[in-house]
Amino acid sequence: MALPPFEETTEEREAFDRIVETLIFLYTESRRLTKEQARAHELTGPQLTVIKLLAGIGELSLTELSESMQTRNSTVTGIIDRMESAELVKRVRSEEDRRVVKIRLTPKGKALAKSVPIEPMALFRQALESLSPQEARTLLKILAKLEKTVRDALGGELRPSTESPNDAPTHGARTKP
Amino acid sequence: MALPPFEETTEEREAFDRIVETLIFLYTESRRLTKEQARAHELTGPQLTVIKLLAGIGELSLTELSESMQTRNSTVTGIIDRMESAELVKRVRSEEDRRVVKIRLTPKGKALAKSVPIEPMALFRQALESLSPQEARTLLKILAKLEKTVRDALGGELRPSTESPNDAPTHGARTKP
DNA sequence: CATGAATATTTCGTATGCGAAATACTCTTG
DNA sequence: CAAGAGTATTTCGCATACGAAATATTCATG
Image (cartoon, rainbow over all chains, first blue to last red; front, side):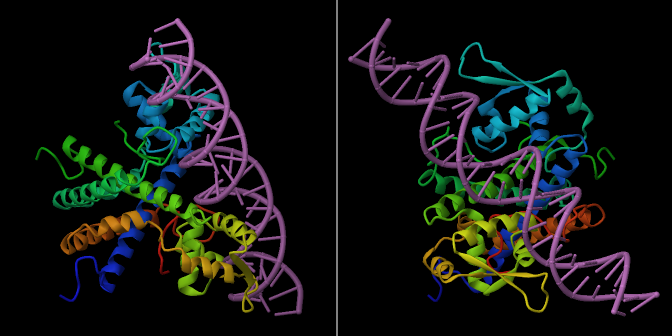
């Protein structure tokens, strides 16, 4: 009677603030450390992600890459430009669909992928190992629920972008698309 | 006997991958929507964060701002430069310590802060409301544990930056420092 | 009180990251 | 098969984001 479901208590608000803050902390610190570690191998964070993705798969179109990395095509174009200049990667026009550009590792890129042991978001992954299996399962379940809520909210709201129906931003995403 | 604690099963690895992916999804999508909503008010995402922070506090030094936003000083300098050009904010040299720059809202900035209803990371915050109180508590507990693990790891590792001992990156952090 | 270590901010160069518009190509339908 | 809708990528301009180095100022010690 006092507080309907949507009323937010002060306590609840503080808890939410802490959660938001911690989410940002975990994401940004992991990103920073990845970037720093990548530098030791003459790579940037996103470039490391690209190399690891391609090493696992072989080749990906630019759009597939951008989806895997949760970024926009226009962002990935720039990343690939620089990697191509550095001879890490090459663009190959697809034969079936000539609009598509396939991205492949060069021998130099493959060698680098093999020699670089770090993986994107390693810091966060490592932290996950400190959780009990029970906690890990619970975390995954809760995050999945949040993801669903967000996707539903975006469905009736977003995708105002001109670009392809991507999902969203980068720097260390899936290692397996 | 088969798998010592540090051995990672395939199943576990996939769960970790999903968690990492979801973390990135939640962070980046919330960030994107905030940015998009801010645009309707002639603001960028980080600028919205600055305005909301200052509206709650009054004034903050540049370093305090960068810590609240989990970004580097050099990044915030640029953000404040543009906001100052837009007359949203002004720099005031501190009297006690003349190295310090205090950032304050201008009347225009205050008015804008009042008229803009959106808050940074609103999408994610809103999603949190879909959780049961129990789930929210559990999530907070697990994230706090991860945060501690990460801080410990960084303690004996990081902070290789030349800049002040900040914590890390931006775009929508605390609303209350 | 002079010097050097420490701290706060800025400057600079480079790499994302994004949306909007332009290009190039494919796929309908008529 | 030609015109237009749809899709893949690039181009462009702008705003972060970062580290390293430069500046300005304060503090600690001798």
